[in-house]
Amino acid sequence: MNCRHQRGSTFAETMAAVALIGIATLISGSLLNLHPTATLRLEAQDEALRVVEATLESVRAGAIPLTSATLSNPPIRVRHGMKVTLVVSPQETPNLYSVRIDARCNVRGQDVERHVSTMLWRPSW
Image 1 (cartoon, rainbow, N blue to C red):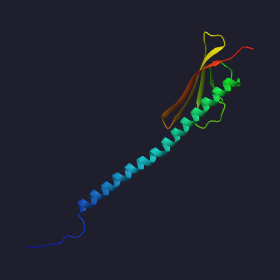
Image 2 (image 1 turned 120 degrees about the vertical axis):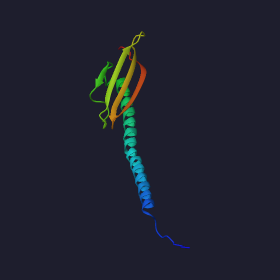
Image 3 (image 1 turned 90 degrees about the horizontal axis):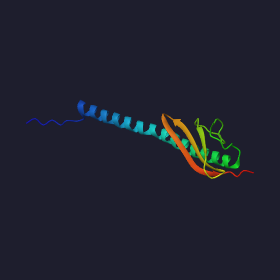
Image 4 (image 1 turned 180 degrees about the horizontal axis):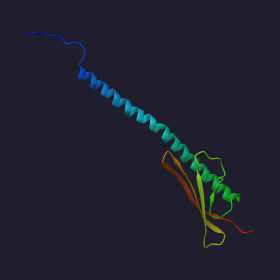
């Protein structure tokens, strides 16, 4: 009987281990790449909400005219190239308006949008 003790690993075992390590590295790398994109998207959503709120308060205060428009200068500073649209529709009740404010931007190919719809009463003095 020939009893040989084999020490070490074969070439096939080594290549299988290298392939598994490579796959694990690719998966972890792609997961790490998703984190900054998700962070940017969340920041843009937060910014869009703040822009919508600030625009609504500016309209209520009379700083922004109560007419439909695309705002080139939002009331607060934005970083993500936000486009703000104001849509105003008079209602049947005198001095009552339906107001919709949309804030949109694109973050790494994904659209981010926030909007608010409300009624606004503007008395005529």
